[in-house]
Length: 397
Image (tube, rainbow, N blue to C red; front, top):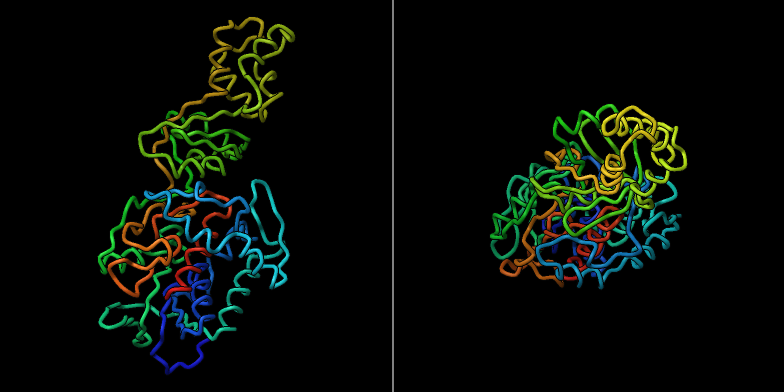
């Protein structure tokens, strides 16, 4: 997709041909800027292709600043206001890509995610963005502009945009490139860690969990003051599913999480009523009216004697009921970047303009997308941050 393989002089070089990189390149190109888009992968948009189960959860209709985690909770507001979720929906509609809305405002393609990649590539081609893949960057320096050295030659530009993302999913090619180059130019990193990631449990807690691997249920998961009501999945190493991924971004090592696995039921009241109304039933049968049978059996066996419910004391029933609505667990850790959907933290927003994503003390250097200390909730928010931060950078680079 290179327009002129001999050309090495550009107005803007964007490193990283993912969601943010392509959006930035096409935006800058639409302004008449000569744009080079570089990536070391063999194809563009690799993470887009696997997102949303292959359907690409490309934005969320409820996007607002409160859906993002950052040391500066106000930083994302300007970009999100200047390029909104509706702006991206309009672009999707322009390309006649059919989509649907799922729970909690999540928008997905009706067909494969490659439609979004093809849309972005077409937009880049329409404004003459020069896309070059399989280019490994060996050095980046600055004089009166930016010099990017690669295994396929050296390129120069007035502006440089870092858009290679974070550390999550290394098997897809994720590296610390943007963080490393940002640090080279004096930008600070803050709070870098895996986000939207399954949590692991201690051996004691796994005694119950491992035989139940694969069981899922709706729950309210709480970490500190934040809570999410979504599905939870029990795994052979701990906990996963949307509710757990959401709270994982707020959880810190040593903290508890609290699970309400019967969010629409006062479990204690239910058990005491069943003791009165169905005295001969075994607790596992009583619980199986509300929970998956395997889980109901495991909890009954772990917390109550194997007798009919009428023979179990109110105190024991209350203790189990309280646990069902307020199950306190202390995760041992998380599954790390290999299973994390995003990288929390990143380039400190204190060093960037919230209006353009340009480094305040390094003219012409821009950082966008996941590499910045702005991380969205699960459900399309991180794609929207990619589109919005890339757009404002593309308008300025």
